[in-house]
Length: 122
Image (cartoon, rainbow, N blue to C red; front, top):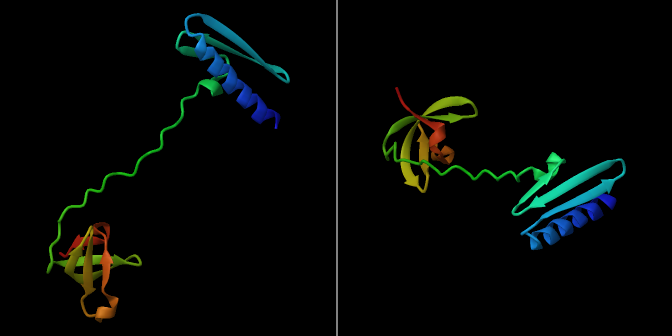
């Protein structure tokens, strides 16, 4: 509870400091046995507590898909399934996936796979 209150007090003080941006302001925050000093000069906040000045980490966005039509319908390929490679044929392309049929298996095993599970047959 005390941490939450002191955090909101800190935010309030920082907000009130921004109102007086033309001069230098100093705020002392006393918590138990530590003293945190905030100094606001124009548009910059200086502090002896590095945690207060740490910039927020940006969330990494998902990489843009680099799907390319490397394979086409009718290509003979190898497809990984449960760690093993099986011969297959591409029978359809939909969105960023290929529908394949495993050679020598019934059509009940046909599935859509992403390009990272496919390699050219040697």
